[in-house]
Image (cartoon, rainbow, N blue to C red; front, side, top):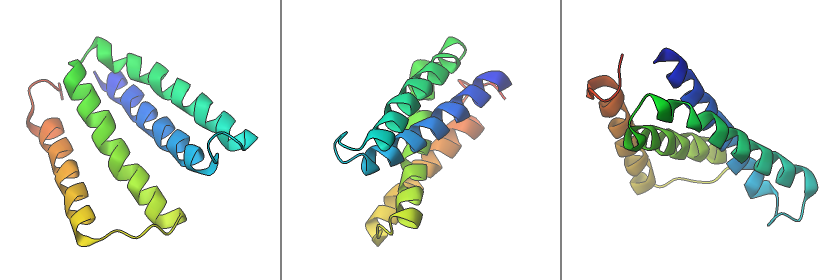
Length: 111
């Protein structure tokens, strides 16, 4: 199960990299951000396929999407200087709380 979690983390990291590059690709008109985006998403889905063998699909997707949302928002906030208002921060905190509840208390995720 620990190997599945490592693959899930790799999928999340690649998805964040791919999404960051996608924002810089200008609708796939810039070569290198476009290549990074496509390769990153392909890698993310490849890594995502491994935890799906050992964990319920809904749980894997909740962890992947929830952490991806929070991390890509942090990257955009730090690198692109995209401002967050209180509602956005509270919403992200709720997503993070949901991920923690799943990871810490769900019997669907083996510890």
